[in-house]
Image (tube, rainbow, N blue to C red; front, side, top):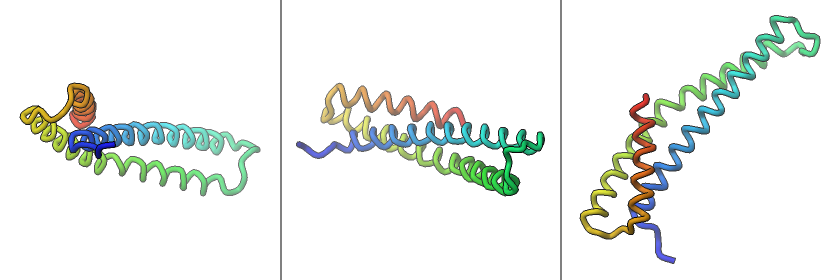
Length: 120
């Protein structure tokens, strides 16, 4: 099997980073739901709580802040990967070295990456 081309590597990189960004959004939503539930239980003085509930709440809030801190650098990495992919698409089109299927996948990944970087 032939090694992946530079275009394929750039495409896979953008796709991976876009999936990673999606994962972090899901994680953030999950953490926010856990924090809200814990805050509600603490406010209602739920008998199910143990004595370390305030500590657990603080830990969950810290984890949420760490998750939010990931987005800035991740968007920067996505923007860099998008730029490299644009360059690889231009090179592949000018040389005619990539298949139509590879170019189609690359352009789809490019579109997805650009949507993320533009929405921020």
